[in-house]
Length: 297
Image (cartoon, rainbow, N blue to C red; front, side, top):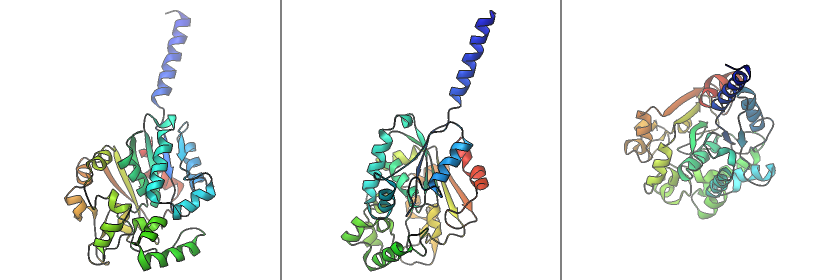
């Protein structure tokens, strides 16, 4: 073979190899009281992933025009509006058009699940929920970060009337507040969680879109002092009518009636349940690399 042709052939092979190893983009959504770009949290996660997976495109969602709005919106912007905002942002990003993986932290995880169910384009491949509360919460025992005064106010509002129109429309945490002692109120008035969990009616599109995920990975923090009940991080919750005994996802009506397709996904090996020994969102880089990074490669 002519030496020039041989060199050209090797160059084409090199380009093809690089092209075939291009990493799937990653979309991040932060939790309560945080923002897209905090150097001590999401900014650090973004940088870490970029270092571990060279060439990967990582988009950390900013809900608003700046980090201040992004932080405030994690408390006060209607969750359905946040999801619509995120869907629009993802749909306009040309780097995501072939598909992406998503990783949500705390409440950002159930918000990204709503994106998967409501906005199939661009397609989400794998959803990683890190401490997300997929059956909601019935308690706010401790607030992360420096927002404890806001959380004290939120706790009072939730305890006094989580399902009133004023609280539901203007308090993010009320929209995934799940009161097992007042199940009828929850089903009737929850603006967000009851909808995405198919509590009122079964939306076949939600089910179809969620089932299109290749993997749905859920991380539970075994020493979690923020999420109550912690089994919500694995899609479990309290048994209806009381707030002491919990049930797993597999024991729930949601699973048995397969209203979201989770039973079928489970049988197909699409559901992954992982655990971390730490408190809420507390993990090491070594744990992240060994446990979650394989789902991004």
